[in-house]
Amino acid sequence: MKNVTDSFVSLGHWPSAGSFGFNTDILATNPINLSVVLGVLIFFGKGVCASCLLSDLLDNRKQRILNTIRNSEELRGGAIEQLEKARARLRKVEMEADQFRVNGYSEIEREKWNLINSIYKTLEQLENYKNETIHFEQQRAINQVRQRVFQQALQGALGTLNSCLNNELHLRTISANIGMFGAMKEITD
Image (cartoon, rainbow, N blue to C red; front, side):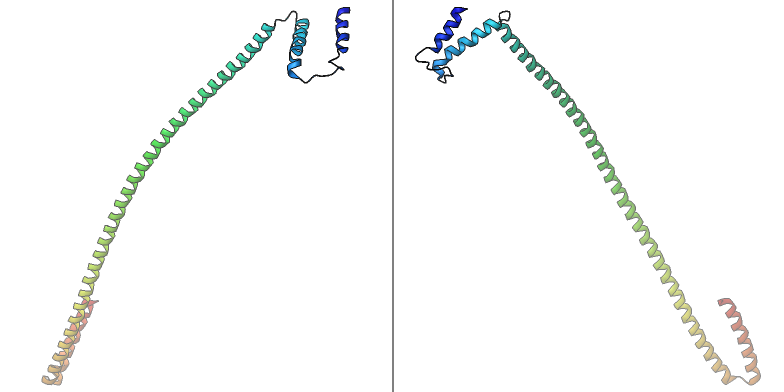
């Protein structure tokens, strides 16, 4: 032990060392630093094997890497599964959309034909109404013409009768005509 302390004391007396402190010259201190670190490791780690420590560190690192890879594979598998589910849902939605599209087009066609048929029926009803109105107006015009012709004929006949008949015959004719007019009025009402 005395040799060890003498060696430290003698280090303090080296003329190149000057005083005790840190040497920042890497080339000069590197072998000394390595020998001190190795000495401390050997002294304090007598029961510990340096290769065992390194092996344990590498095994731990390897285990972490394998765990990370395993987790990544599990995540990848989950992502692939979710992707397949999403694709299946997409296919289902696309099929439903196609079905809605087909149903929509057929519904549009059906509504178009229903509308066309409805318009044809409406046009046919309007045509029938127009024809009925024209027929009614024709009948009314014919009736008006008949009434005027009849009135004129009566007026002419009355004029002729008035000039040809005496008072007694004239009164009988007027009575007969009034009876005829009454009967005609009942028929037209």
